[in-house]
Image (cartoon, rainbow, N blue to C red; front, side, top):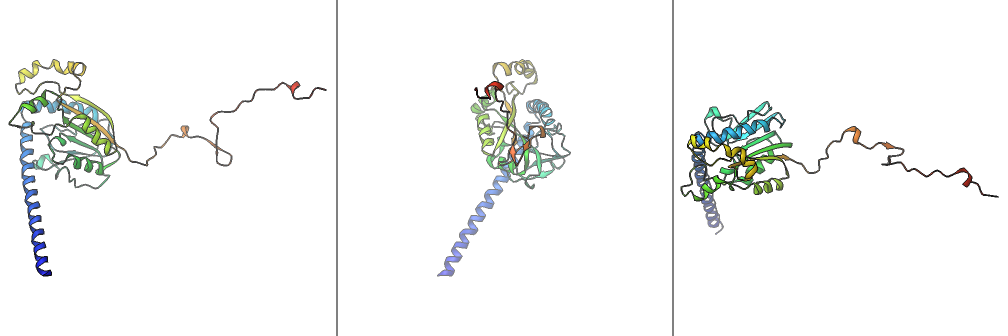
Length: 284
């Protein structure tokens, strides 16, 4: 009786393992197909236009984030998105990409790096096309060193691009992405004890493939920050990893001097009013 029960349980386990393996295989194939479609879209005129604007802002931002190691999760387009970083070591990770455009072949929620080994992590629309965005952020938190930075680029649902996503039934690239709102991303970062340090909205023109029409709409780039600041196609968020229990080092001049037997120097001297000499003697 015991043997039959053991055989039955083992067969169930094998079927479960086979089911998970088959599901993982489907997930990998779907991810590879999605990555190929996304890379092709960023090679279109509209995709190249968006990436050029994003890359210009990234160069100015990454130049201010110091560190020796930087990683990009997901390869997009023909431009080097890590061009502005001063980091000596730069890696590009992707689940599918040509060998000359990718250094590490892996999924973003399973980064094959040691913990606390990276100073800057760049996620260009990585969360937009991830089936496990929370796990991706947890992995980024794991590999980042204390005071390290994560830079996120995401599509904005509150825009003309988000509106097209709602009315587009075919859901082609990039409209089949997640399009997470800025407030939700900031909440996720706060839960992982990230501190948002800066951010900006990017690309106010509508999603038009016609280059001449996009050029006519260039005035929207200058007017967007003033008249519809939250209506850009994408946004960038920079956050710093904070570690609980760490005490920032204060400069010497800000430390309180200690005097006597471990007693702190008073913040201010107590000044007693001067008493006239004639009041110190009793009158006879």
